[in-house]
Every structure is written in C-alpha cells, then in structure tokens.
Amino acid sequence: MDGLQDPGNMGTIMRIADWYGIRHIVCSRDTVNCYNPKVVQATMGAIFRTRIDYCDLAEWLDEAANKGYATYAAMLDGEPYQTATLEQPAALVIGNEGKGISPNIAANVQHKLTIPNIGGTCESLNAAVATALLCAEFYR
Image (cartoon, rainbow, N blue to C red):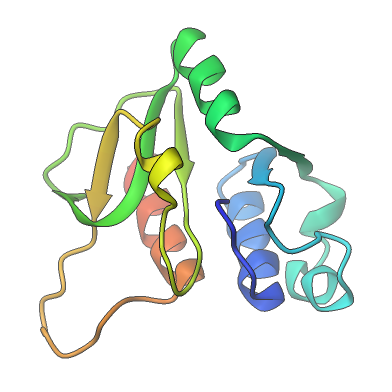
C-alpha cells in the first residue's frame, strides 16, 4: 500500500488479501496505521493472519524485483488488467485514494495495470474494490 489513508480501505484490503491467501502486506511509512481501531474492525480478523510491514516501499520493490517478483501498480494509465500477462510471484501496489501511486513508486514498478472505465462517468474506483478485482485476476 502506497500512502493509503482511509482506515476502512486498509482493513478491507487486508480482508481481501486474507480471502486470497496473501499473507504479507507491505506499506509505505505514510500509510494509515494497521492498528487503528477502524482498520482492525474492517479486517474482520484478517489482521491476525496477515503480516504487515511498514518500510521504504521503493527500496522494498527493488528488492522484490531482484528476488524474481514481477511488480505491478494499479494506475489509470496502465494496461487493461484483463489483457495483461500477469506473472507469478508478484507484488501489487495500491495507491492513495486521492493521489494514486506516488511518482517514486511508479518509477519502481515494472508493470502498470488499469481497470477500464467502461461507463466513463466515474473518476475512479474505491481502492479496496480495485484491489479485489485485481486479486481475482491474479488468482485466475
């Protein structure tokens, strides 16, 4: 997570990760605290099954790429997720609700993914909703 600020989003993303068997979430240092009461409540227990680390996310992504992980970010200018080749193992970055992925993080990912705006009327999707769609596609 890159700068996620909404406790409900973070807790829901942790619950989504738990659903898909993702046991490690890495957060930039400016992401909401995972022990915020609203985060804990939204996880519905997933916080007890998921490792959460806060670190320099750009450095972590570089290390992950060096270990053979494909790195992805959810961005408005990316390749449609339905047609992208999704490699495994992978790291997926979800950005701040209002600002998206920060420029230094965008520079450290190998692949940009987007969820096409079919209706064309909304500006963006909720971060947790986007995470669920992308996790489902990685699982598929």
